[in-house]
Length: 186
Image (cartoon, rainbow, N blue to C red):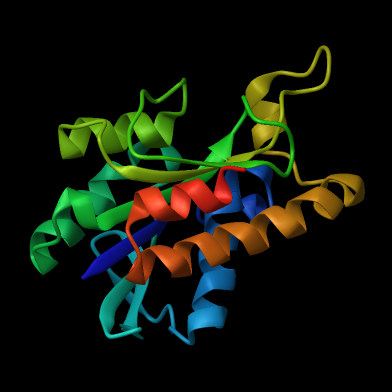
């Protein structure tokens, strides 16, 4: 069983903000894989389905970004999912807008959702797709920037990145993650 998590914040006021790129990609992936996000439990919205002979769960934690681990850990425990079988998708200020990077482990790099995951999973070693949103404009505070909506110009770059993240996620369902990394980290 594979668990793919998209990080974000629930609520209309956060819809389509930079910090919610994980939610946006999970929605796109759910459509692509024909998995309905129709279950609410473990403080999350999730759905499951069979993809390429593998059971797949897609999760959007509804705990707000800073408490994401509080949703992820109980779901993993309930379904007996090992940390090796999870992948998380989230925004990254240290990558240019529209770039993606796949990693097998790493520090939170200041990302509170990843800090929460590390705290609740007791490890930094979990697969991830980091989606670049770039740094704030000069004089803009980070919280205001990440909670702001993408501009039309940014979406020109984000749409292909979202498509690549969806493709990479689907590839990981049936291929080794390192193989997927070699293709999508180019």
